[in-house]
Structure formats: C-alpha cells, structure tokens
Length: 207
Ligand code: VGL
Ligand code: ZN
Image 1 (tube, helix red, strand yellow):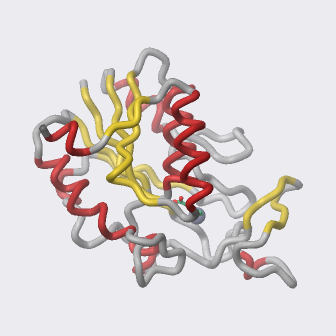
Image 2 (image 1 turned 30 degrees about the vertical axis):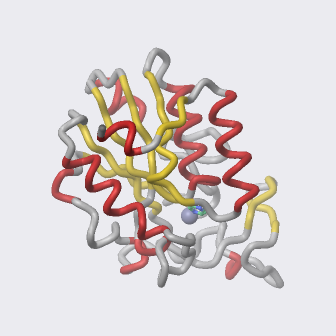
C-alpha cells in the first residue's frame, strides 16, 4: 500500500500568503502529477489550522517580532507571523491542488499553547494527531512526503513517519518541496537522510 503525504500546501505558505515560502506554489503542479500518476493507493494531506490567538504568533507576545525566537510553554519557539488561521483563505489548501483526490486531511496546530510542525504530533510530543494510526490501519507500507516547508513541517513529518511507522519505507520528494531558509533546507535534508530517509525527485517516481 503506497501513500503520498502532502504537507501544508496552503495559501498561507505560497506567495501572497501570510507565511509565504519562496516558490511554494511551484510544487502544486508536481504534486498534481504525482497524484494523477496512479502510483499511489492513498493520498493524504496535512493542514496547518491555527486559532487566531495561537501562541506561535509574534502578535501574541509583547515586544516580539516575527522570525525572532521567543518561548512557548517554556520551550524556545520561533515567532511566526499570524498564519493559517482557521476559516480564513490563508488556511485553505492551494486552490489548484487536486483536492478531490485527497482521501483524508489531517489538521494540526489547533492547540494555542503548543506549536505542531509534524503532521503526527505536537512539538512537545504529548499529543498525537492520529495520522499514525490512520496510516497503519490502511496498511501503508511506503510513504512519500512532500510539501511546505521543507525545514519545518515537512522535515518533522518525515522524521515522525520514520519514528511512528516502523517498517514503512519513507521517502522525501525534494523537488516537490520548498523551504524557508537555505541553511534550514540543507540541515533538514541532512537530518532526514541520517534517519534513513531516501531523498528522491518526482521525475524518478514518474519515470
Ligand atoms: C509551518 C511554520 C509554522 C510549516 C507551519 O508548514 O512548515 N512552518 N507553521
Ligand atoms: Zn503554523
């Protein structure tokens, strides 16, 4: 059972969005080509889905600017611009994404007291989203992961897939992902590789 996980392909992470990732929209046609390829039995997506007062937002911390470090729940926390607020256009999946082909959408980041980069659990590690049991129940044996942003939600989703789904072959689709900083992308790819993740391109899959 082969599955594709589309991480946070939302307006908020594409140009024009509140936490835009450079070239974020460029991955949409690649994701659609993979979905249409017939190579996957199951397509799932994650969706960053924050309340308006989420604690990862710089706006909730006096004197903090976006993209500086602060704290949340006593842990270091990157202060983000307000993004992907529940019910706003910023939180919607990109309109050109083949959403009809997505079997399940896992929302995350709903608890204002903790951030949630991974599609599988919150950053404190306390609360599972349930995506691990969903994929296990479906009998997934191979999982390809792509999306936004490589250095945050994609990286931690990939690494948690390895941790929570033993025996599942996890691959990162590099050309179908975009990240926030060049250094962060480099570190993310090195870290995923070190955890046994194969790094592939869509062209390898579609060939
Ligand atoms: C993300 C920062 C904050 C992501 C989500 O999807 O990578 N990054 N929230
Ligand atoms: Zn977020």
